[in-house]
Amino acid sequence: MTWVIDTSHTTVEFAVRHLGLANVKGTFHRLSGEAEVNETDLTKSRGRVEIEVGSVDTREEKRDAHLRSADFFDAENYPTITFESRTIRERSGLRYEVDGDLTIHGVTRPVTVDVELSEFIDDPWGNRRAAVSVSGEINRKDFGLTYGTAVEAGRLVVGDKVKVQAEAELVQVAAVAA
Image (tube, rainbow, N blue to C red; front, side, top):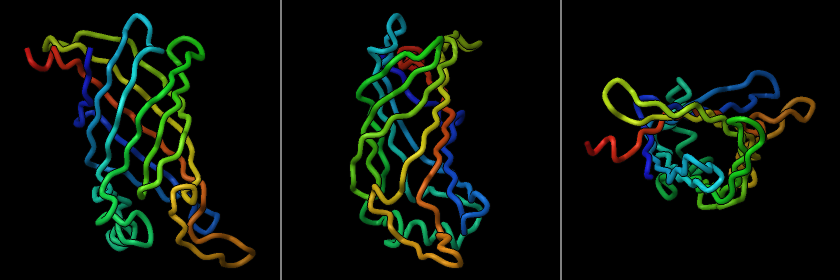
């Protein structure tokens, strides 16, 4: 069955070190996605998410404009970030490892993320729902995001490692159509 992301109950966040000190956190406000979910064997499921780069928000407009610029995401030429799953492996209970292809800045690389699935429920309005918590880490330079300089003691203004966290609620399309 096909499921879609309920964007009003979904967040995609990232964190990257500034000067090797504090994590600067951000989120993307506009995204879409769908999954083909096999409830009896979740390892046979697959999904795709598309994020609008222009919706990046770090609570600092100058930084957000810089992130959208050619120095970083180059949102004008690469308006979306996409993730498409390839393989799902059960770890234990409702925990999985998902291998997929992540495309940022026009560069596609394989990544593995950890996923925890909720139970499947029927909500009070007759919709079939589930949720996923996703976490992972990438190196931004693997995707051509190389902006940055070293400062005191070799510390980077912008760290290379980016932690990604997402919370997504999915709703079954058949339920939405009804």
